[in-house]
Every structure is written in structure tokens, then in C-alpha cells.
Image (cartoon, rainbow over all chains, first blue to last red):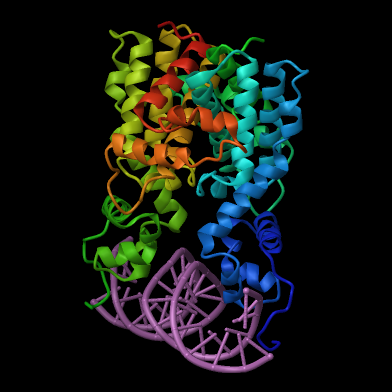
Length: 222
Length: 222
DNA sequence: ACCTGAACACCGTTCAAGT
DNA sequence: ACCTGAACACCGTTCAAGT
């Protein structure tokens, strides 16, 4: 326990690093102000020099996740087809976020108003405009895509253990299949009948299928 | 502080009632095991006779919210057009959930595997089948609609004060408009240009627009 | 400005005990 | 089976103080 005073260890970035490490290794509950401080070898209240409260730390974590996993260069590459660019962005961002099994509860618990989130929105509007979806429709469409992306990740993350890396997709689907096979067909006949498909709700395949239906509905040409 | 022993006050339902009351009046953070117990005039650990842990209470709260606000009778009424039935269900459920400003964080934090959620899924499959969306596509489509619904509510709830009833929609849109008017046009030109539409992201209008695009993409006839 | 020590008002959960 | 009292190991945040 050293004396008080500047030690030159802490910064916004270092605090977000420590928060993410805790999130990935020990889950969202471990991402506490006290936990982060301990991780950094610092008193709990030292963090309050850099962030006004825990909510501010969470917002910074959200922006970091988006900045790290949203491939804006692919989205911005105007030589590619707009639909392909949007698909690449969405599939990559989803995959990156799923790799942080505890991230979903943070993503939908803190507003996406950081600089990286704004940048993502800007590029998305641009790609949609290239696809002919412009003006108010473009704005609505970009929000719709974000809602779908975050909603998918959140629902999928509910079945993951936030304290460990996500298992291979086939294992997760097999686990779901077992769960749906136990659904009583007398009470829920249609659910039971589609148990095999229900099991593939999660995963890249369902996400891609839904994204394509969405882009169809938005009139983004294939 | 009475003596220990049965008092005939507690039950699963009464505990969920108290949890919802706290959620609506004092926000998700107030919905604690200790808070619920105090609300019921009972020792904190008394709840553990009825629920194994807090997560189980949250699952029960989620199922109650769905059961209360999902109008299954309208969805099941096979005399109506399938698309209209699905729209009525989705719009009603969204409106009901938004009325609990703190509910979103709970909805996407606990799995939707309760009996009311299963029943909703079953009816949704049925309405989609009536619209010609059957088999695996029907299963995928029903999940897509749920993702959109919950994602919308969650993102919209981020801007609400969970400790107070949601203000009128026009007030919320006006507040958003002011926020978007402050977006620097040099950094985010497209975002700034669409500020007026961005402000209407939230609300019934955006939700309805997105739902219709979704149903279009799913091939549900209008 | 940057950090510590100590404290305040909370958590979820468990364990032993009483009726 | 149903409930209490007391305790354990935690939280976020604030305040006064030291460098």
C-alpha cells in the first residue's frame, strides 16, 4: 500500500483494458469498480479521477467493443457491392461481440453514444445510401440493422457462460436441440414440431438468414 | 419482528408482484432480494423458500411481463388477416413493455423460457403458418420477430428514466432532436443531415416502420 | 491532479435455529 | 415447510487527507 499521489499507471484506456479482461475471464458481475481497481493494484476510489461513475466506465467499454470489432474499412470500401459491405460489417461485428460472452448485458445496458458508435452509424448510412436507401429511410434502416444486431447478440449471449469463452457453435446447437426435444408436444405442438430448426436459432446461420430477410425488406439489392 | 414460522403471506406470485412494483417505482437496481423482502415485511432470506436465487426471480418477472402484455387472443383470432394479427401483437407488446421503463434490462438479462414465453412463441408460429410462412422458415421468422421486438424495447429504454413512468412520446422525440442537433456535421455529416429522422428513431412510428420492413422481407402478405 | 484510508449504505447468499 | 437472526464476502460512492 504505497503513499497517495500520482503514480502514472492509470488512464482511461488502462481502466477499460482491465474492465474488459475481467468481463472476459470472470463475467459481467466481476466487472466492478472494486474489481477493476484491484486488478490494477490501486485503491477502489482511484478510478473516480478518470470516470465520474460506473456507468461512464460501461459506456467506454461499449465504445471500445464497437471500435475493436466493427470493420469500418470493409464497410467504407465503395468498390464493393453495398449489400456485401453491410453483410461483412454485420457478420464480423456479431462474431466479435459473441467472442465476449459477457458483453451483451453491457451493450444493451449502456447507450451507444460514444465516438466509435457514431462512426459506425455514419459509415452505415453511407453504405445504405450507396444501395439507394437514402434520406429518412436510410436513417431508419441503419437503426433497424443496429437493433437486429444487438438484439441477436443479446439473446444469443443469454445461453452462454459469461465466465468462459464461447464453445464451438455446433456444441451450442446440440445443447439447444436437447432442450427443445424436451418441449411437451401436447402443450406446444408447433414448437415441438420445429424443434430441429429452433435449435439453430442461435449461430451464424440464423443471424445471416435474418439479416438477409431484413435487407430484402429494406430494398437493398442483392 | 415476529417469531419464525409460516405466516401465509408469501408466494411466488406475491414475490413477483413486489418485484414489479419496485421495478416500476424505483428502477431495476431497487429490485433486489433485500428490497423485495422489505417491501413484503419479511426477512431477506425468506424469499429463498420460493426461489433458489435472484436469477430465478428475474425469470419469473420476465414471464409475468410477457404474459401480461402479450395479447394472445388477438394473435390467435384466425378470422383476422395474419399480418394484422402479428402487427397487433407486436405493437401491443412493445407498448406494454415500454410502460415498464426498467423492464428492458431484465428482459434481455434473463432467458425467455417461461410458460408464457413458450405460449407466445406457439401462437406466433401459428399466425406465421397462416401467412404461408411455415416449417423451418416459420421458426426462424418467429425468432426474428422476437429479436426485433426485444432489441427495440431495450434500445429505446436506454433513454428512459427507469424510476419514473415514460414521458409522452413527443417529449422524448423532442429531447432526441436537441441531442442530434448538437452532432458536429464536420465529423458525422450524414448523421447530422438526417438528424430530424434520427430523432424519431424511438417511438411507435419507427417500430412500426421496421416491423413492416421485416414482415415484407419475411414474405408475409400485406 | 492524483491517489489512499476509512467509512456509509447497500448487495446476494448461507447457516443454524425456532415454530 | 416456513420463517428469523446473524454473519460472510461482497458492492458503488463519498469525504478528508496526504503528495
